[in-house]
Length: 436
Image (cartoon, rainbow, N blue to C red; front, side):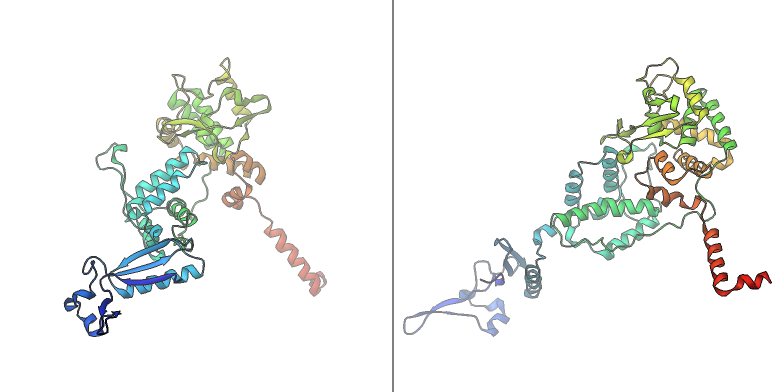
């Protein structure tokens, strides 16, 4: 039984009666086929002149019959040749699956993400809506090619890619405008969000290969003039005083001191409860953080990468904590507003940090998150090893710590090259010559 074939939907063989009374089938001549307008009626099917003429038919690997219509025979032949090759090489993908829109694939992929945090889900949702679906949503998932993705990446880098922002979430009538996208953010939009949907389509056998597989992502050159955010202890002391002065509350100064000297994320620090503090042993238990649910509402959740840890606290930070938690309920949050609610990191940034950082010129452009880098660089300068910094910052493994801070640890290059020189001198007898 043939696994693939092509049928003419307009033309058929005719059954005629021969002089001897027998019935036989005859086909139209070449001349008749060249002029369909004059084709005799008995060679015409009931579908003559209606719709596409050529029907490609085949049996899939499960024995289910499929068909596809084409206007030209050459297109049908090319399609069937590909189908037969895919079946023989066990690469067969149902052509109808390839025509599924990217939007459908993306929504199915996002719905399958049952293990991620709500905040991660919201990021995927936002990137899909803002950048990915406006470009690819209506496209057939099987029609996306690498050159098209390369072109899109170039547009994202220059801020000229198609986009769609929700103006309802912005205070101005103009709304947001896209800007040149950083390499790190682009890798998430394209590699994680867009790529996640494509990888899902491959796994579900909607497409045979991932067009993103060999795409090269750009890299940022970084700031070649400056290093990671770094502040001296004198500068940190000035900033701490500025924070407390601006807010008029000692607790804000203590919050800054924890951020700048112990390096927690702002959501982790503001999620600390008094019962999480072990001031006798100068540490705090980090096992929750402020995050958002899928509707964008603030809630408590597990820390990033689910890495619970003990946060080391300096003596002066411990002293500050003792003062602000004295006599309070262990279930209270350590850092609270005047109304007793847990401090909101975004609000603290706008209310306190934007003003306080002006007290030190070097910190003018620093975000609250940059204080993590400040804490890490000072810890390394004081002699902390990789493992300690990893645990302090809550990195999943030491690789992430080394990728960010490896250049800050004293290296042994001078020791190694010195040893090489001594061995060379010994091998060549140069030591004796120098001694003469």
